[in-house]
Length: 125
Image (cartoon, rainbow, N blue to C red; front, side):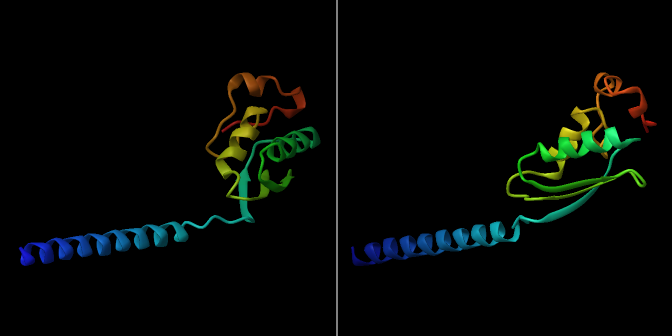
């Protein structure tokens, strides 16, 4: 009878140790996925003029977590700083595409593109 109780306690102790190891592994894995509060991204965005610049920047700022958004017409790059705990670069690309501008791999719908002012019709790729 004593050996059975001892075996049960040993098994229970092993289970507790395994559970603690699993918990520590999970915590360690989560800490490695730390998200930046000031992540910098450069996004290729189609645009032609100052109207495009204003529209693109406004769309980027509409995403909660975007701290800075500056579109450069000379190289068609949107420079953004965002809090990855609140949004992702994909969220920004989707917002920009929704107002008619292709943003990297996220393309504006034909309808959204056609709704742009005539001078804003950039060459789509």
